[in-house]
Image 1 (cartoon, rainbow, N blue to C red):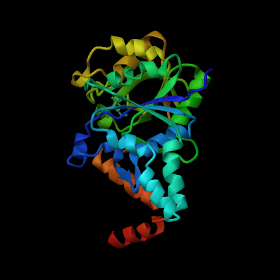
Image 2: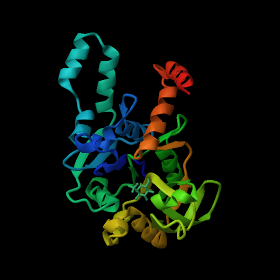
Image 3: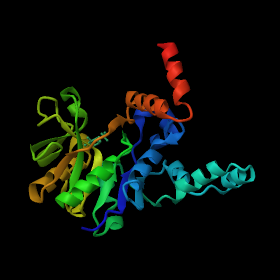
Image 4: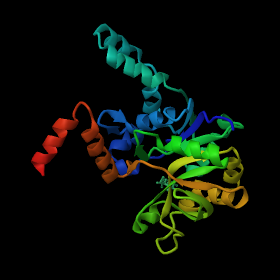
Length: 288
Ligand code: G1P
């Protein structure tokens, strides 16, 4: 089995849930303490063996390109001031992978965004990671768990988690035969079903390992929920021809695309932080 080295990362969403912040700054740049969420996503990819990362962007996403580029003025200043650690860190961010950018010229949905990666991917298996979910797992990154399962099963794998039934209407939901503790053989999946119609409480959550076959299915997918080409509909089509597995990855997931999820991530990452964690914990005790 070919090693997975490529990732497609859609970042072309408008981020309307975080207006007015997102008027001039991409939502992917929202910081968890001092690290943009997109950097946390990129580090998950790199820690899972990914070397080539294609961002699917739009005209408002330049800060993401700048973030993963060298920054000569800043670097010269840090060097001159003897701030070696910060200099190294700034360089590391740009050097940790090869970054590519392609614009999604029209907003036609997540499936359409992923399709923009077809030429980049070529004949190789690849991963897709969405920036709205960050997953904390210091032992093994979520996408690394899925890649490992892909090598074992030799079939496309999508990352899943159980969610409260009252929230399933926000996600893709699967109907599947459970084949072990964490693995499901998907029979059918549907994007944002009503709570009554949802096939289960198992949601597809932001992490995918695909073979290039998925592109044939995306190309055949008609606009679905919200008039958009939904990747969940393409996965449903793939499930019915070649098969797809769902895998419940381990790790604490934060929905940083929602205000509450973003606040939860901020507080919990701050509590774990070497520099501010202790003091912050004391502060929280004081204001309770
Ligand atoms: C997207 C996907 C959906 C998935 C969700 C969370 O929806 O279309 O299937 O469950 O992300 O990863 P969005 O939140 O962009 O509307």
